[in-house]
Length: 515
Ligand code: AMP
Image (cartoon, rainbow, N blue to C red; front, top):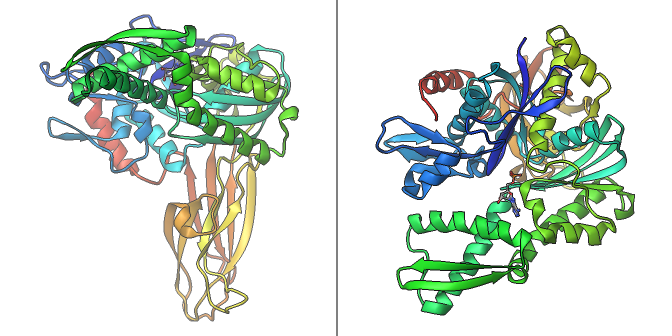
């Protein structure tokens, strides 16, 4: 039987967990014996074709930052981002696939890792979700599903602790922030809503430390500390160390070496907290938005669960304690709980789709676990209704499935053709909350062919459904002729890379060796 596994593909670190014989998730260490692997890639200069992933890549980066990539998750889904290495352009999916390849390779020593669930930030849009799944496929993995990171953490939390009540998950990682509100009753979890920011995390706190170091150096020498990419790579790593030390101590002393000479500097926690205050305030605003979406007050929240390495900062814990009136929960390992929860989700997905392939011990271990997730975004279509005041058609985005609707869900709306003799309809499937089509993502466009010689105002029924595996089905029905157009996609089909392209690149990457 296939190993059932979950992968946390993080901005700074990634982790792999698999289900043991009784359905409990366990972290699978990498080949260096570490439980988490830095999400860093380095293309060797001297050894043609050699690619290092993990700690070695982080260490090599200072030698030649041009040949290194860190924090690739920040670029996931960005079609314009490329890394040129020896004349080959690497996309974010391809770089991420190298990290996943190393995780698969290291984790497959005891038994092959193949079927996986990969976690993504809750607020990742369809393009970013698809890019993540493509990365898995390119790494030779069978991605059976994806799960939102805070939901994965909550799954692990609820299956290991006795919890009852409304819980807020505060997930501040290396590059992203998510807040999720859910109800937990034993092993039953009902997600209520998700909010987040895909560009707010540890990397931003590191930048603040770099600014403090640069200011201190300027004061001492009236000169710049960082003059090239090599300096930047060095101080990015040092800044992360300083930041982590400030979580334990009130101040850190450092000797900085720049072209104008050395400088002995001290950074205090107070200075640092002042510098990051606006970033932490952004997380507090998103908590407010989530509470509003959940129609909850602060006093309705019974527990706050911390997830992600950046929640080790005392300021985060203190602000949350002040806001909620109790200490946040630190019962689960903030670095590992997402991968562990993703493995549980992989087990639940396998049981739902192919129960015969799940070993009896695993099935027994997971039989009480129930997860009710919600739609991460609103999904709609672009239409042109007549404005009542002007009598003119106006182009607008009409939402069919509302954000935060419990899954599985389904909704139908009826639209009408605009012109006499109209023989086709441009169909757009959108993702986003706005009525203005310029402020939503078009995640698919298709042409629906209609019969000729008919007057305007023919009804077209548009039905969207979204299942528990985050698979969406859209059906356009022309009432008059009975013709239908069906568009099916899970977060992993349609969009940037076609199936053929994925297959071609996967074949090319198959021969690439990561170490
Ligand atoms: P994650 O994506 O959850 O693995 O979180 C990684 C982020 O957590 C990185 O930016 C780390 O620098 C940060 N981090 C880890 N430990 C600490 C710490 N003790 N204090 C502050 N930040 C930390």
